[in-house]
Image (tube, rainbow, N blue to C red; front, side):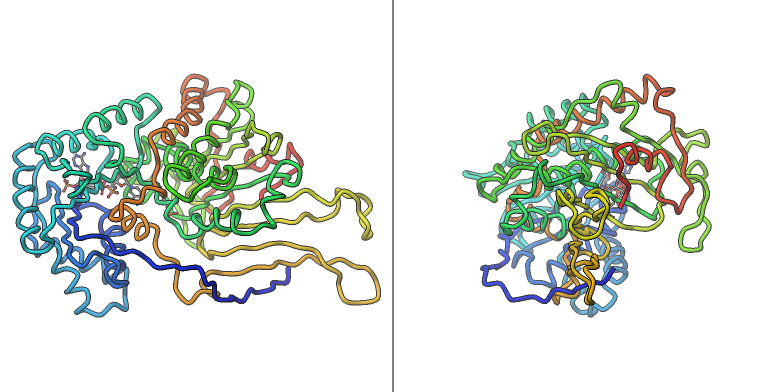
Amino acid sequence: MPNIQATMTPSHTPCEELKPDGCGIIIFGASGDLVYRKLMPALFNLYVRQLMPEKFYILGFARTEMSDDDFRERARKALTDAHKNSEAHIIDSFLSHCRYTSGDYNNIEAYRQLQKKASICECDYTKKENKLFYLALPPQLHSTVVSRLSQSGLTVEGDKGNPWARVVFEKPFGHDLQSALDLDNHLCSMLNPSQIFRIDHYLGKETVQSILMLRFANIMFEPLWNEKFIDNIQITVAESVGVGHRGGYYEQAGCLRDMFQNHMLQMLSLVTMEPPTRFEAEYVQNERVKLLKAIRPWSERTLKDNIVRAQYTAGEINHEAVQDYRQEANIDPDSITESFVAMKLYIDNWRWQGVPIYLRSGKRMHMRESEIAVTFKRVPYSLFGFESQHEMPANILVMKIQPNEGVDLTIHTKQPGPKSCMASLSLSFKYSEVFDVAPQDAYERLLLDCMLGDRTLFLSSEGVEAAWTIIDPILNFWRNYPEKSPLQTYKAGSWGPKASDDLLLRNGHQWR
Ligand code: NDP
Ligand code: BG6
């Protein structure tokens, strides 16, 4: 399909990034994967962009024994891997803000040592007591760490939140609805709601954030954004990677908990929620929650017919052989954990009545590609040679989340020539081509927002509960009636099992 590229007219919207007040960033699990792959590179990028506070320190904490220098060296390797062109002296300057202390997460004495080290850092760097605690830890440790932090007085805030103490929690928030509620009750007994930052890193992705701007800053979409004009919505998050070194976690979690309870449902809520009256945390979070609560509850029939779970078998991706899920490290050789889920659901409100919404996500799929495709209804009557209106191609708006971030709108036009022949073409733009800066990493946005105290892109406790309310019945159904929802297989490198295509075919649709 021909592609028409966009050009950019500079906008006059004031767009100044704020710089946070001086603070310490105290990272729990500072020997782990997330810290080196995501958090340190994101903090470094903020530093390069001069968005870190004037005065800050990063204090790593974990059981692994390391000196400050060992921690800096590990971080240096991560930064040079992530930012190949960075100059050594800028990395040195960033690393000079980093320190480390080791201890057991359950040992109160370790928190006293941590407090001492934080006080030294405050004298050396910030002269302020603001603290951001980042729990980059397996979720079973969250309660323990918060209890110990609270017992040691580290989370006490000053008058009117000055100095502040905030705690960032990585997903997953619980294993099911009840454990999520228990965790939440525990956190709320130790911290004020304003101190709790629950991360869903998809909400920090530039293209996910731009969903709201596309919808609510352009008058032409919103009048059509309802059941009268939209035929179906599809959200795909396809990954070509497998479980990597996270087999132990993934085998317990599975794709439904890992991707749907959070990222997929959050993207769905942004695409379908009502406009918030203000672009502020409480307003945006409330609309997201309202939408999740409007998702039609499952019945035994829809649990059986509208959800597909599958696991990959050996295959090939990019001409490289890929092994069976059950042969991956730390995976049970008889595993019945799903690495792929597809589902059809409906939203019971005036705007979306009857519009099928299809979600799919999986590992070891054909390629890495995440997008949201909104297919509009066809025109009511065909003038241009098609025998019926049903043969007319539809308009499709595709929000490309990654890797080629952009927007694509399929429209139809007349082909040049004497006859009235129609051609479909795509009006599209890619962020990387239109803007001269690469989209920032999600963690950059989210870490900056935590330091600024802006919770708009974070999950509320009601949001977590509403998402589990949708996911819990599926987990129970799978557990109690495995024969009614058998685990399918799909070849690594494919787009998933046939049952996932059949799910759409039943409504006369197909994956884009
Ligand atoms: P890791 O498994 O690498 O664990 C982080 C650190 O926690 C480890 O280095 C280890 O440090 C400590 N730890 C691990 N297991 C235990 C245990 N059983 N008991 C005590 N300490 C333990 O986790 P990740 O860095 O991958 O993830 C951290 C958090 O971020 C998790 O909640 C994860 O779900 C979430 N997340 C991770 C992503 C990723 O891509 N990695 C993506 C999105 C979310 P030490 O032994 O030194 O104390
Ligand atoms: C994480 C999941 O939350 O998101 C991973 O735990 C998944 O399994 C990852 O690979 C995908 O994130 P991204 O940003 O790479 O699309």
